[in-house]
Length: 250
Image (cartoon, rainbow, N blue to C red; front, side):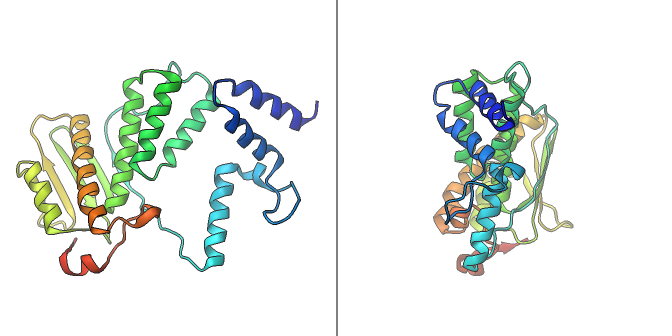
């Protein structure tokens, strides 16, 4: 058998569950290459870079030809002292585990994380705590990027969030957070853009889950309603007409 034939047989062997046809098709596309878009050829370099990276490169090339600026992804540093991984006893197949990690890393919306959670429950059953923690971290990263945070850390009794250089909160948003945290959210006077949420004896995981709940509501009800959420690219705008009049730059 040729190398290509062996790869195709391996793909068929790996994807045997119900609904695997699309995955087999994607694997075949990686093996044979996509060819050029406007012509009949079926060769290409997709096999060398992988389907996900190929699509990313293709999207960047199309944006460049259209004269559109590529969206800038806000890097967020998250420090949460919990186990967040997929154990072998939950997903035994190494390739499937890698693909799931790639899906989680690629999420850009909370709906993406919800879809992955549903998929994992349907395919592999009830999640162990470490997998739930991994999805919690993914939700934190999505919200932090959308809100313009650069860093979030939690420890026993406190949670710290640092705003990025172009992030902003409106007075209404700050009032909401202050009220929902019983006045325990404080803006550090000597450190602009740094908020500390003090909650005595709370463990980091509980604080992180509560933070996600509060900021999911904040994003859904303040940012999307005011049009500050950046549209379908899911990147927050650093400024806008509403921000010119109502935002507090941090």
